[in-house]
Amino acid sequence: MYKSLSKDQVTANYSAAKQAYALLGVDTDAVVKAAAAVSISLHCWQGDDVVGFENPDQVLTGGILATGNYPGKARNAEQLRSDLAMAASLIPGAKKVALHGLYAETGSKKVPRDELGPEHFANWISWAQKTKLGLDFNPSFFSHPKADDGTLSAADKSTREFWVRHGIQSRRIAAAMGKATGAPAVNNVWIPDGSKDYPADRLSPRLRLKDSLDAVFAEKFPADHLIDAVECKLFGIGSEAYVVGSHEFYMGYAVQNKVTLTLDMGHFHPTETIADKIPGILPFVPGLMLHVSRGLRWDSDHVVTYNDDVQAVFNEIQRAGAWNRVAVGLDFFDASINRIMAWTIGARSVRKAILGALLEPSGLLRDEEKSGRLGARLALMEELKNLPLGAVYDYLCLSQNVPNGTAWINASDTYEKEVLSKR
Ligand code: RNT
Ligand code: ZN
Image (tube, rainbow, N blue to C red; front, top):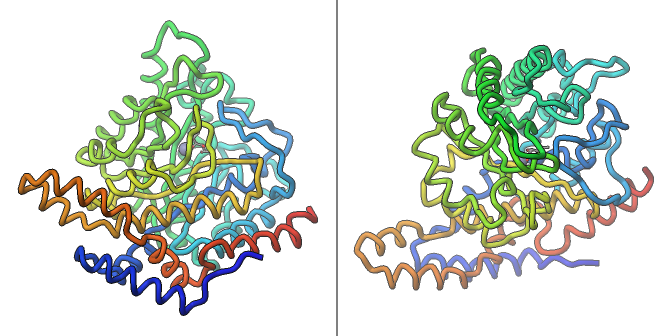
């Protein structure tokens, strides 16, 4: 059995930590509240290896891949909601759930993707209302027979129109979710279109994609119901040579059309990180969405761990004062470990990085920079690494009524024994 520190011990450690941060002018009580208030969107697709309920035999396409066969994955909506609720109970702070078109509940009826509407997500919506979780949405442009030769950029007109209709419907679904839950839902458009080898024409598919997106985004919705986002990518399996929706393409599209840009941490060159892109892009787009992920050698979608890359991303949001313009979502799918643990590890790490960023005395760093004291700036950054983030994080967990330290593993183990292993 893993044990938590006692409440008294957590509080004692916290008051020592509070003093250390106070020396730098940081009000930890306020920071703990602010860090818990930033929503983390739990991606439903970690729970079942991106299969969904449309067709349990459909293999995952689109150049993404979940590897592993850890037992106990969710096989229907009820199981997935139960698993999400379990993980949510171990993750401190505000949370949303990100759904995909694939997770519609259409009963015994087969509903084509271009006819999916809010009514097919009614159970998810009422569950979200009951559990006070927000919702986000993603149209599913993959794992479908019509997605083999492109979707929104397809050369074939009727294929393209099919996917445009799915895109239009997905915004109606997301807007209904936003309206019902009282927090705007991000509708994130990612398409897999691309090619395995060098194309002769890289422009035409992009022009078609631009037109399709214009058609998808034509309908207007209130900003407090829906946030439109587009997600770029460098390459996928089978689209190594060319991806239509590249970073430059969507950067241009987002700037021109004032939509949110999604940055997935796994979607760039293997040595490229996204932290510096954040202040580079913020002057031009209304908002950013993060897909916090961990690419290992490729866009492998490993479970997020607390590392320098993740901390650097949230530091840039803090330094840019951009918390209200950034939506934080997770995007990984590891089928080789307990999936509740995957969600919990990833989301707890992200919460820690959010807290770490908010604990930074950014004003002090900036003052040293302004007065040209660059040695002091570097010294501060170095000393900050030693401050007791862990003690404040434990306190945040305590204040959010979730286990601190390793003790959450017990709860996950019990759930595995009592629920997952019986599936
Ligand atoms: C794929 C994108 C996309 C998906 C999910 C399932 O490379 O990252 O966000 O992972 O929508
Ligand atoms: Zn992503």
